[in-house]
Image 1 (cartoon, helix red, strand yellow):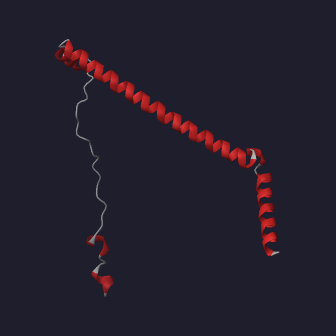
Image 2: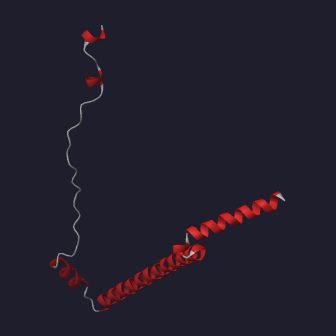
Image 3: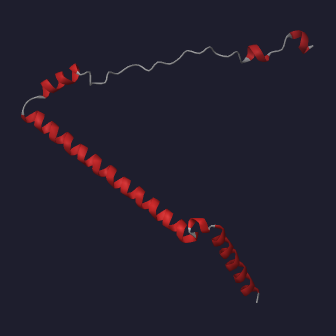
Length: 114
């Protein structure tokens, strides 16, 4: 008898939850949303992989072309002219004054110690 009451209580709570979440389509609406989000993420991941593959293929073909036509030096000159080569720069760090601290500020005057 207690088991039936517990089951009835659970079913009633589930029905209340479904009624409260009717705007989202109830449990099915939440599941549809999650499935849609998962599919979008998987599609984005596949597209990113395809873009990376295509870029790497293009880069390989470009290198093969430059090698076969012996245009490596001309390519490097072109990049230098366009200032396309990134130059390494030391990272600038702002200088900040150190806050007073340590023993100097933590010590009380001798008069106060007495």
